[in-house]
Image: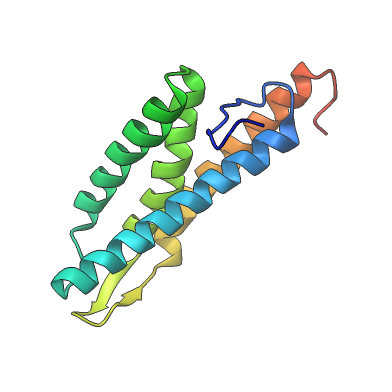
Length: 140
């Protein structure tokens, strides 16, 4: 273990490690989107423009976490970014809408969330299958 540094790993031959890592990336994106929306609500009294929050999350995640802390790692950097900003933050910001101005009440639509969940589940299944195959294990 390093001294507080974020250790980069693409879990090339570890399906379970890769799965838990990517699910945590989704969770990071969800939490980051909700916290950013709450901060804007507290500071300005209204729900933010969701596309603006999403752009801030993309720039901060790629710039601070991926590039500054871990460096460019090609496909792994791109994939991590997709899980955090697409499946995580993107799904929250696309799905939830302000219900009552200035209150913090949000309304979600499961039908808007399903495409994100479906694509994420497919991506996770393929990623685990590829890693299991590389490891010489049959995925099913």
